[in-house]
Length: 451
Image 1: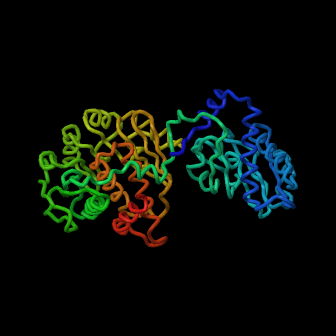
Image 2: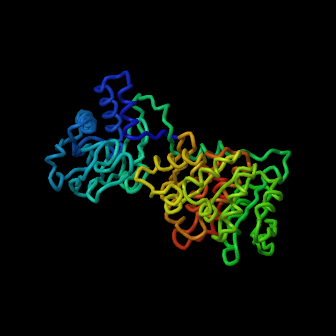
Image 3: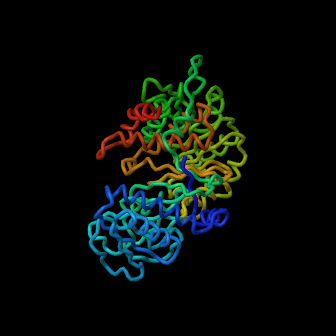
């Protein structure tokens, strides 16, 4: 896991550092120079333009320029306020105009085709939110210091940062409460199946679907199987037992009062998934509001299950009555309904706020997925891409979370691991034309790659 610190948190770390500011600038400049030399493929005869601002970010860039000049690079330092529209011809631009605390608009000068190496963050990108104007710097590589910043992980800042490298400059970032999830982390979190095990050790019960919406239920149930659930029971209230796959066991909960049936039939299971494709009726809402406080199982609440919760005050009352962990998986619209307001630009803060308010683990979907626990811990996942913007992919994700919960993984790590594997599976598929059903066959390959 790579630590993630907001600009404010980073400033506090800087203030607490025993080293003088000059020492930190020297280390940042050295790290920038090393990356620049690698990008240049050498030093002698190479030309570098450093665009430097007035603050510490500019000082980092100037220090890097001095170091490059010592190595034989022809360095031109341009003051950010006097850079004009186009930079002198060069082999590399070092963008040190503005750092993570920048607010407002910025139009970067035209690099003339030269690649851009950004210092800490591309100039013009908001370090907290990733927001950026059209004129913000577009980097090929960003070298950032001590920890990642949210603006490097959230679009459009993520796209403008290019390849991001984290350089250790001796700051203590061990107190970070947010991290970027990496493959080795997920491999460590997911347990191997014991030699002496049986299907009920990791069984999942899925309450989902309705006439005309059975596909969502089937995708969710099959995803749980593919992600490692030993057994899956699928109940579509009021419908004949059509499990959608031979491995899934179909059940027939009654149309009304189906919560009592699910509660009794799920006792041998280890996790419960509720929501995908359920009808948005008063009867469904009442059943879910009865089921959630009564079930002793870890629960994944997705899609139409979230709709049943209503707004924040009632959702907090119902979810607060639960004794077992709960994971909710809202997209931005579902978040707004639950929270009573839209997702703010600070997505990490938004997920933290809802998780604390509802006392659940929140998996906030998006091009960058943010997972937050009630105690403020945050995990950021960036494996997903536009291939997941297809009907049914969220149903697949809910099934994966359910499987990982059933394996005994705690709620925060189960949700983060599921989002990570979900994205990895998509990246193994077609760049165009991928549908949610394709993810089911790609999940085992994604899991094997992690192992």
